Image (cartoon, rainbow, N blue to C red; front, side, top):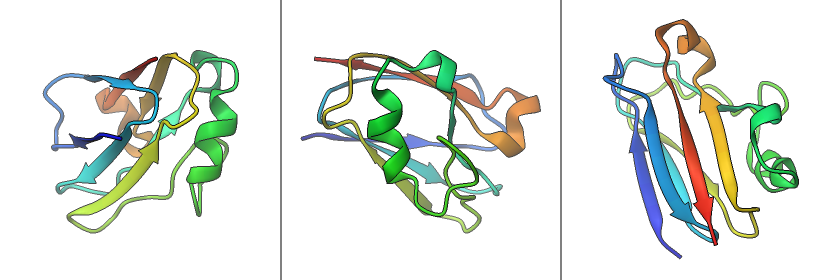
Length: 108
């Protein structure tokens, strides 16, 4: 299992794109400028993806949405073990207007 880190600078320079293998972990790292969160789009993840992602989002704000990361250096780790291959699009809800979004492509 590999762990990939996705840092969220403020403001973002460009949308984040990351390719991982099924079984890898992605660590979302709030460097500064919170609050941040991760909100996956239900209509843009593979079938079966919600069942893998949603249970990992403790204290979530809603379906497929993590809690707010408020403190500097706070992290959120998402495991893509048993995740269906495909594209998982996400955004930071508090910064959606600033286009703080990206996609994770999971390969087998």
